[in-house]
Figure 1 (cartoon, rainbow, N blue to C red):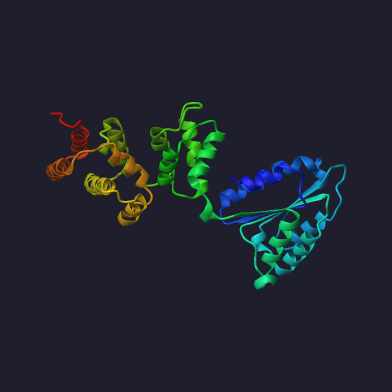
Figure 2 (cartoon, one colour):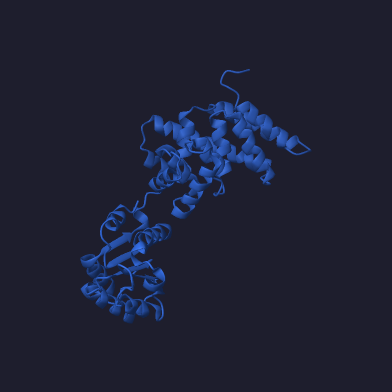
Length: 338
């Protein structure tokens, strides 16, 4: 994660660090990493550090500060943020400075994007990147190139917990691919787990509740693996959240049908990516795949028992919680049990 930037920060401080990209969490991490590495070089910071906003007059003031020599310190450190709001006039000033920077200043420029203000080789964004690359370091962060699973594993490791690839994939399936949410769920899982204990599938499933629908698939997955305690726990949570029994019944039937289709396609050797696309199982595929590999009730058994439960719900004058509990008990019963 940010290996090139870390490598650049290990050597002598550079005159310019240009950090830009469309992944907010990683952009923030790159900013913090850079400032932590450079701040010791500008102590006392009250004399030698200043922060500026690229919008309005702040950006111009940052360029002017960069030309000032440090006071009783190795270097001057200047931070200019929100580059995406920069005017054409400021970018022209910035490009001119970066082409001939003050050697005793480290200028850190951060933004979600660099305004173009021009076309072709004369576009200011290209001129800025080219100039910064010659005298300093350019860190370009692209959301499409990020690997949330790797980020989750790295964050867990920093917190003293092992998170294996399979569990990281499960966490991302449940939380989505936005890094800020993934990191939040990793921290929650670390708090839930015992100190320095691995983040297992059980920990991930129990701790990661940020996404609506998690408990729905967790219930069906628990039925598929015949995990009675987990299935009853998730059933009670869904019922307490106000989900109707008939809705749960329809959900269980549909999701188990999807699991049966996944199992059949895996047996035929269909590539996992093709299964995801054909069945539209983007978020929950890892959880479903893990469940079907553990074996689950056959189609005839499931269909017969769900039809029976539906009839019992239609006849029930009181709440259908007991009917649903009975269904879960039967579907989680070990194969061959009476």
